[in-house]
Image (cartoon, rainbow, N blue to C red; front, side):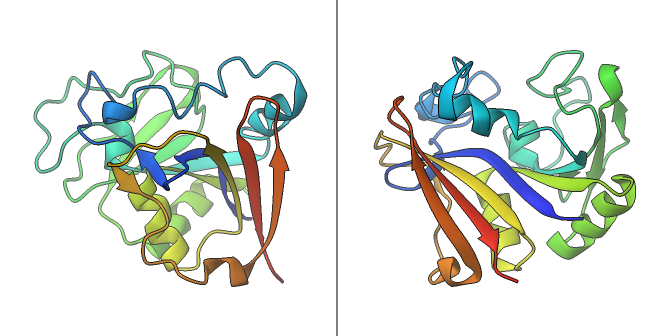
Amino acid sequence: MTVRVHNFSVSLDGYGTGEGQTREAPFGHAGERLHEWFFPARAGVDAVFAAAHDPGIGAEIMGRNKFDAGTGPWPDDDWVGWWGDEPPFHTPVFVLTHHPRPPIEMKGGTTFHFVDAEPAEAVQLATEAAGGLDVRLGGGPTTVREFLAADLVDHMHVVVVPIVLGRGVRLWDGLEGLEERFDVETTGSPSGVAHVTMTRRR
């Protein structure tokens, strides 16, 4: 079992999301600019990397702000995420929150579990649910940074998008020397993004 991060987009200045996240603007002032490379990815290197997102994944971990904007107690129980009635995960998803709530079962095999857990405990829960498959760490940047700091990420695919956001939530803060733990490869794309893969050194 490995813990994998896929298709995680950051700006040139290292922001994984913009400032001012709301339910209407899940990436804040960044809008969709961090992910424009992904949606037309039907051929070429972008498509190859985008397609690696799903195979072999048995469970996902995400931070609360990937599921919903805001902090504190949940304002209502009607919100089921940004993905509609059939989210794209098709696995158990463990949403990290200091305010646990009952699970939400969705169409297509996705069940959101809301847990108050430290990174190592979350990995254990997801591993048990994954049925021998890998665990995907979905984000956002604060969650990925915490798991990197705890040395719990085995493989990471970061997409460096040639925009400057200037504000938001940064991925790399406090992770000086991180590259020493990984073999790092960079692949350029005609779309202008750079795909950076980081695989744990054994």
